[in-house]
Length: 267
Image 1 (cartoon, rainbow, N blue to C red):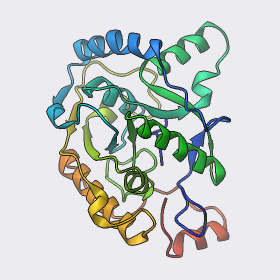
Image 2: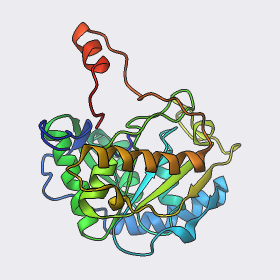
Image 3: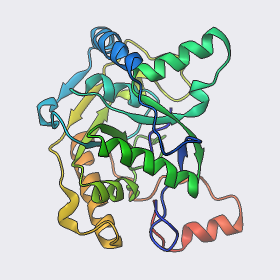
Image 4: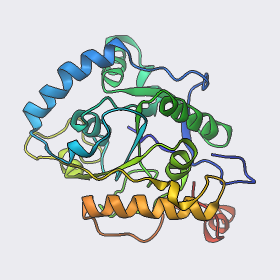
């Protein structure tokens, strides 16, 4: 599962690499399948895995909201919708919805049932389109879940946040609810086929953050300050060791190494 990751043209901070559908103008919500899944999967998961859920009362009952969480495991995108007191949407790789046969249909229905929206991975315009999808959902008064780190932490540390989540919050005015996930990497480590029922997950929701106090979305300083405030909220909940760097793939070419070394905004 990808986190739902969070652009703007190159002259401004461009969006982080993200997934996007071919028809970004119309994000496809889950509808009946999600309603059924929320009624069945949520209670069943809570019964089997007995997650510890803290701070549910802090989540706004209606209106747009962004859940910004640390990211440790594939199962994070199941844990948040199961624990949240309201429906949550997030972006997932379109390949999860396109498998053949009965198994493919089952996987598609599962992801629809937990609020996933199919998107195709890409950068540049693809990232802009993905951001548009998330913005449209917020404009409809819905909740979306995003991971400011951009990708899963493989060593358990909390990495620096990228500014895409803050940009979205500053642009839409949606409050940001920080989420701290604990133990999801033990319930379903990378490479595991199924989650373990021997471990328990803790999901902590923090107080909503109004990032508008930092300035407009067009301000790089505002985006950075808002991102840092969001990450501080996540850190207080997850209690992870801070990595102090961005979670970036290894640079394999001289050009990639130069790009990572040069000061630039991580989107």
